[in-house]
Image 1 (cartoon, rainbow, N blue to C red):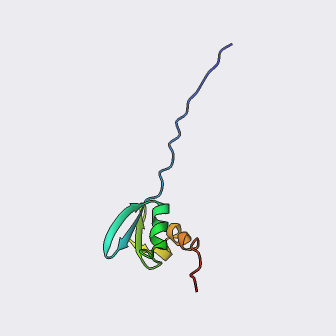
Image 2: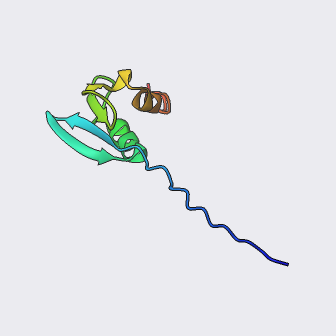
Length: 79
């Protein structure tokens, strides 16, 4: 009886790296979690210009689906 073992190395997808224009200075790369922290701290808002690999240029955060979804995870403001 022969046993054949095959090992397949499947590369893990690289996490998305975000860049943001903060105080007119390009900053990053940020992980999604780090960018969420900047959103919570009000350093990044919906109008902040962001970029990630594959985009032709910088766009407002609210126009980039991978970033816009992070704003929906924010708790509502305290009144």
